Length: 485
Ligand code: C2G
Image (cartoon, rainbow, N blue to C red):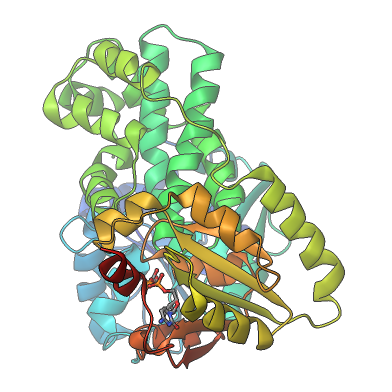
């Protein structure tokens, strides 16, 4: 039996309280609203959970200290915009032994922080200090269905797996089955942005469109969130998991979802304000728009569905115009890496990894391939069994490295692939992709010429050896161009 404090007496807070109390935990729920507290203590019925009886043992209080002091777990279930102020309120009553769990979904607009980072920012002293193991609790879980004891799965994400596992154990023998995941930011990003995709799906059905359009928005919505997550260094699998795909499906296809309902009204011509009023509860998708559009800009990630919803909600553009725009965008392939490379890559990884294959990666434009590059690639390959070369695309070289390549990406790729030192060539499209590349390609060693000395040491946090090799001094692509001129 554990002592649990729940901050927030909304439908989700009440559903969690009910489930945890029913399996024998001592549960105290805090709300700042006197009337709400006295009504709930009297009736143990929540107005938005008709027919659901909350156990008599659940105690409601206006005294936040009472919901924090001596608790093993403290769940934040207030609307995302109140996370910071609520963390400020509980600061005098909590210590880092207590497990703080964020069950709200969203991103703080003013700081672009995820909600676990907001709580750490208020309570801890930054990265190194205490509280750097706040748990994110997010997934395909409608409060109404959890309150109705329907089988539900959800993710408990924390950098410290022990904390994530403690939350998983807390829910055992309840209708909620918890999966753990170390990728906190990935889980939180999913929870926040999926509400925007749900708005889009609602708008689409409000316009009278059917399941085809909804399925397109869900699928392409997951692709958008995944692109942003990868640029932010999250793990790709998170977006295919419960917090990502699972939650987006449940939110975008159910009338339990306020975002879906609000979107449907907006598709029918309601203004956002009218839609929120009609839904009568917080529509987190609208709250998540400013931060998400800023994050997409910051990381240079194209998110057309999010941008479209932002135009409708915040710029008054007609939904029907946005849909036409989305349908007439430039045409795309679904896979951003050539299928052969991925198939080959998986084959090699599968049958060689078990023999402890060491995998090396290096990055560059490798224009006008010369012996200086070859020296680098030969030595890089000698550091392991398998060499991946992340080759700067024409756009990345031009726009981010200010280097106009003589040979095109395809030509430079073909040259590199003909070298016996090189096993796989992938595109280098951004400075930020290195983090995810290390994970995605299971890299053991990162190599660069020593003109980059010290620039990529942060990759050591990914458990990767970072090695800078001496350049071949007298040769460079620029020198070749100058000499030829
Ligand atoms: N190199 C070398 N000796 C030379 C020229 C290049 O060892 N005479 C190395 C560079 O240090 C680099 C690699 O060969 O490690 C590729 O060189 P460039 O194409 O010039 O790479 P660069 O433009 O520095 O791009 O994200 C990292 C960047 O993409 C690196």
